[in-house]
Length: 234
Image (tube, rainbow, N blue to C red; front, side):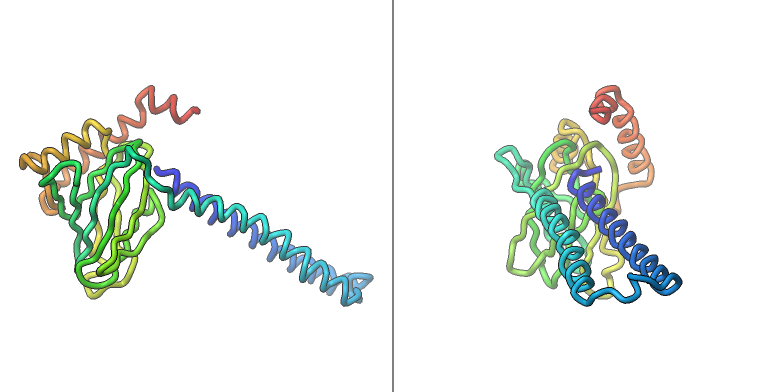
């Protein structure tokens, strides 16, 4: 769904595969030494120290460090002048989203995002530490009392997904979730304007199953459109 989430997924699976391969190699080496005694069974101490203590760790850690630094830079991008800004207020146990570009537009537990647009979330907490996490779009970032943190993300296509609090914040933590309604920029503007006019549901309680099903259907149709397919092919 989002490039940042794809980067996080790629480096995670690479680490799992790499360290899995190292573990298997160590088991195989142990079995070779144990079952077929030979030169490997009585190597020089300096050989093990150089290859096992210097060459292997540096050969693995340096490329991972460089790649991790590059991915970290993409995971926390800085929004440009055309970024869409949304203010996020976390509280026990819910979410309030304010849209500065549309004065008076506020939604509870439903975050409206434009697709294919950089969005900067300005996050703060009313009470305790919370953490904003939309797994399919980006990493998580804490919302702290008395401090405003920013997270920039980008959704590739319209969809209806979920976000949640990733920091234990009390008895209602497990229910502290929100819907992320991603639309085309035009539909997003209409939806947020509808929050002001009263034509768009403002709270999760007002979002019916039929509304979610219709939104998910529209998202699927959008991803199957020729333009979307052409974009994926690139």
